[in-house]
Amino acid sequence: MSRIAPLAKPYPPEFGAAMERIMPPGAEPLALFTTVATSPRAWEKFGGGSMSGKGPLEFRHREIVIDRTTARTGCEYEWGTHTRLFAAKAGLTDAQVRSTFDGHADDGNWTDTEAALIASVDALLATKRLDDGEYARLGAHFDATQILEIIQLIGFYHGVALICGALDLQPEAGMARFPTA
View 1 (cartoon, helix red, strand yellow):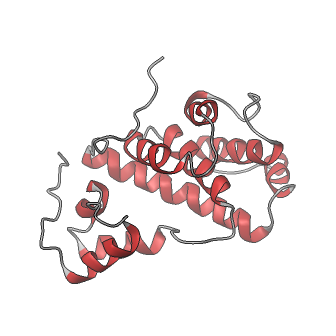
View 2 (view 1 turned 90 degrees about the horizontal axis):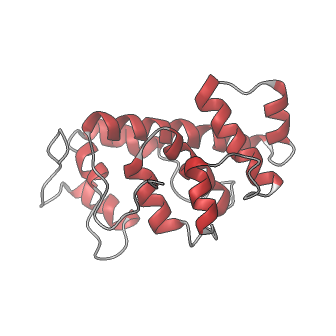
């Protein structure tokens, strides 16, 4: 149970409409959503920063960034949700999913482009910057619009990790858990 009680049905109309757009038909909203939405202002800011929808990155690249960011920030809630719901759709193998958790950019699981993503997530989370070599590695594969999207995804999902950790959100039922061995 979250430290803040989530919204209960009936949901406010704006929140209900948002859930109809982003949740699969018949699926209940995620606890993260119903908890953040207890504050209309927090929900508005969360939704505005979420980077959802079609963007300049391939779906696979987007999921690699999200999975690596949530793993490196210790956010089992979001890592488990994304790896369970989207990894197969993104074409990630079991070894690649595992690598987002405890692998590294050059562990043999990734193309050069994907390794640049992993390395960029790691660098930004560790030092809050990309040095010239790290930026050049990323820039060899992505244009400025894509790089901004990558940086914003890392920032947003770092924020999600903070929310989940502060509220002690437990993984959703049936979602993946961090590997133990």
